[in-house]
Image 1 (cartoon, rainbow, N blue to C red):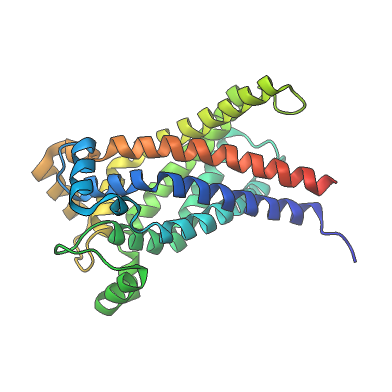
Image 2: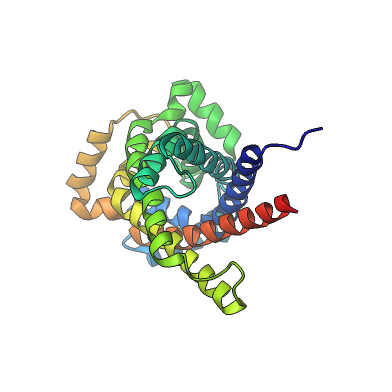
Length: 293
C-alpha cells in the first residue's frame, strides 16, 4: 500500500491540531463567555456586579451552562477553519507556507464568513442556554432546538446570521492577518527549533502574546455588532431586526450600551487565543515530527 501524500498528511495534522486547540480554549474560558452574554442581554452595572448576581441567584454551575454545544462546535469549527484556511491560502498564494499579510487577511475573512453558515445555529443555541427566559433556563440543547423550530421553523436557528457574517468578515481578516504579522515580526526568531529551553520558553511566550493580541484586536473591532447579534440571538421567538435592536440599545443606554460586557469579552479572548495558538502549533509540531519518523 502506498503511504498517504504529504499534502493529505498535512491536512490531517491541521484538522487535528485545530480541534485540540479549539476544545482546550473553549473549555477553559467558557465562564467568561457566559458573563459576556449575560451582560450583553442584561443591565448589570459592571462585570463584578454581574458575577456576584449570577453566583448568588444560580450558583457556580450557571457559568458553565451551555458548555456542551460550544465545546463540540469549537472542536469542529477550529478543525475545519484551519483546514479551510489552508485550502484558501493554497488557492491564493504562490507560496502557501509563507503567505503575505494581505493573503492571510483575505483567507481569514473568507474562512470565518463561510464558517458562520454552519456554526451560527450552534452559537444561537449556546446563547439561549446561557440566558434565562421568563425566570427559567432551558434544560438542554434539545429543548432549545425543539422550542425554536416548533415556533419559527429551521430559519429560527439562523436568526442574526446576517450580522454574524459581517462580523466574521471583519474579525477574520484582523484575527488571521494580525496573527501572521505578529508571528513574523515578533514570534519568529525566538527559538524553539533546536534552541535551549530558555529559547523555547521565549518562543512559547511570544506565540501566546501574538495569539492574545490578534484575538483581542479582532473582538474590539466588532464588539458593538456582537452586542446587537447577541441580543437578536437571545430572543427565542422575536423578530426584531438588527436596526431596531441597535436603536433600542442607543435609546435606553446610549453608546455605552454597545460596549456592555467588553471587559470579560476581551479577558476571555486574551486567555482563549493565548491558549489556542500555542496548543495549535504544539500539536502541529508534534504530529509533523511523528510523520517524519
